[in-house]
Image (cartoon, rainbow, N blue to C red; front, side, top):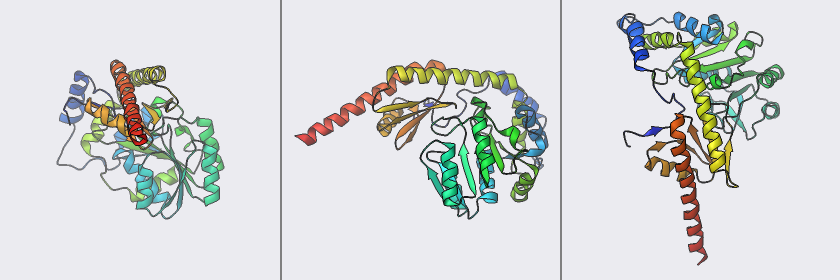
Length: 341
């Protein structure tokens, strides 16, 4: 794979922090504060307090983890073991992995309607509902009021994966003390740009936090991660500026795709996250073509997901996608003509 590839497949931060910020982080959080011969703070108290200040979630209601993946895993272990779980299809692929890991039966709902999750849960006597908000990979966002109605209605545990909530502002984090059955997960890999050091959080009421803590591995977040993430969280204006830039790039990309590519065979989804989803039967063709051009995206069976990167890359990106679809159509028409002869 070429070294200068444009990576738009994993919804990471499009660009690294400025050099002076990185230098400050290294100086303040690494060189002067990390004793590598000592175990990290097992409770990650400073980190949880820093994230509490950023998210407005009381730090006592937070568990820090090695990415939100670990925390979703722990939530499945506590609430979904040998139970029936309901989720959307499509949604984050790891829900299926954790269902298998904990011998849970996973029911998938094809529509993107919260009421259909409840109906499926009722029919299948489910104990857990899990979904990402905004949805990954479609980018569809669910209103806070609608999510609260689901939590209020459902008799089991609701796990809301808010990995992309920094781009949407419809979090139910302030409801975790109100509802005993609500669990949320957060990541620092997207808006905060810390995918490389793996840090996330789980939020819930004190009883659920205690259950998670009972099975959490000790020292699960290393000292470097704790200190770097704590330092990054002290720059809320910088984070907010980046979020604004991403939303502008995302909306520009969506508008450009609609103007240049939208047709009867292609559906472009409006997004509340930091990516755009295009439903198309040419997903494999587009993926291969873009890869040859040095652009890496995420391909699904019936569509592609593109991370909103730097806005200046959008013109070339849209042009290349349009070209890829055109070539794929020509190839299929040629194949059909050959068969007709």
